[in-house]
Length: 158
Image 1 (cartoon, rainbow, N blue to C red):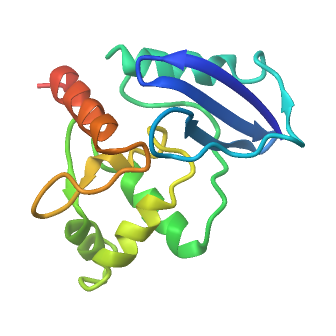
Image 2 (cartoon, rainbow, N blue to C red; image 1 turned 135 degrees about the vertical axis):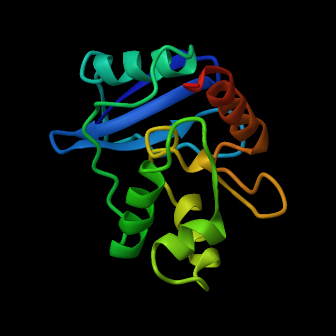
């Protein structure tokens, strides 16, 4: 596995992956624990285009990503993440809305668990999934979730 670490408006970010695609995006500051990289090899050039896409997104100049992703996870998690990726830029859905769209109105807790396990936040935009009575949790913390939602509101297409 290869990785890179770079500065962003959200603090230091780590991207990790291999020939299959990106496996992890980690916030190195804040609530998300960093991954052990003892057996990984640092290669800042390997993820230059993904880094540039993320930075352009965080500057409001990009609304989608072209990077190949390989998040792993269970079939249920991948199904949830796929549904999350269909939420349009600048819009949100509740955990309950997403459960309904996936055909199981009672699966809001499972949806919440799958978004919490998302190994590629921002790229799989789980920040767009909110609680019915508030913002909901986020792997990078509530402040980063609010920052991402505000960014998308500010730059969303009319």
